[in-house]
Length: 376
Image (cartoon, rainbow, N blue to C red; front, side, top):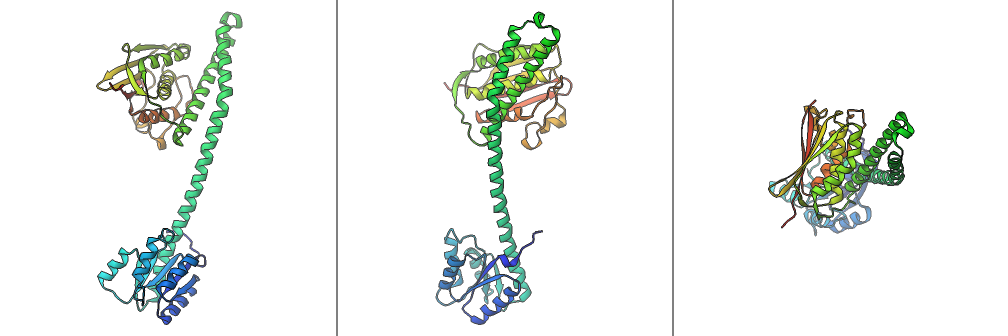
C-alpha cells in the first residue's frame, strides 16, 4: 500500500496485567511515535476505550478477572467499538487459542516474549489498514457530496432551460405554419426550418437529461397503466413526420388495430421518440423508416427500422453500456448526446421489458423493445 502513515496521529491502547510488559511495549511503541494509553485489566481497558477511542488495541489474553477474549467479545458487541482492530498478546501458542482469538474478533496475534521487529511490523500493518479505511471513508463522503451537487446541477440546467426552450419551439412551429415559402423566400424558409429542427433537438436533449437525472437519483416513479401501444406509437410518429419530411424520409407503419400493454405511458413515449429521432437522424435522404408493432406470446414488441448508416461491430458491443457509451453524427451531421439510448434502456427495464438491436454497417439498423401485455 503506497500510503504515508503518520504514527503520531494514531492512538494505541496496551492492556496487560504485568507492569513490566506494559512498560516494555510502551517504550517500543513510543519510540515509533505512536500515542500510547495503558490499562492493567479488562475493566480498565473497557473504560479506556470508552474515554479515548483508540485506533488499535494490544490485548493480553491471560488476565485475572476478565480475560482478553471476554474484553474482545464486549468490544465487538458494541457498534461504536466493533471496528477497532485487536492484536492479542499471548504466551499460549496452541491452535485452539488462536482459533478462539479469531472467533471473538481478533485481527492478529503476538506471542510473548516479544520480538521487537515483529511487534512493530504487525502494529504498523494494522495501523496502515486503519489509515486506508479512513481515507476510503473520507473519499466516499467527498464522492457523495460531488454526486449530489452534480445531480442538482443537472436538474437545474434541464428544468430551468426546458421552459424557455419550449416557448421558442412553439414560436418557431407557429412561424413555419403561418409563413409560406412563397412569402419569405427559399433561403429564409430553409433557415427557419433548420432553426426549428435544432430547437426540437435541443428540447429533446433537455427532456432526456431531466428524465435521466431524475431516474438516476431515484426521483422518477414508474406509473403503470393499461395503454394502447398502437395509439401511443401513432401519436409520436405524427410529431416526427414533419422532421422526417425535411430529410425526405417517409415513416411507414405496420401495426395491428390495437395492442394493450401495462406500462408507464410517458416513459414509453420517450423511448419511441428517441428510437424515431435516431432513425431519422441516421437515415439517408429519400429512404423509409418502418415502425412495427407485433404481439409475441405475452409481450408486445416494437421495432423501428431504418435504411441508414448502420453501426459497426465494434461499436455495437459498446452501445448500451454507461461506461463505454458514445455518440456519433447523423447523415446530415446532426449531433447527438449518446444519452438517449441509455435512457431508453433504463426506462424499458423499469417497465419490465428489454431493449435490443440489429445493425449492419452501411445498410441500417433496427431497434426493438418489448413490454408485458395487459394482464387479462
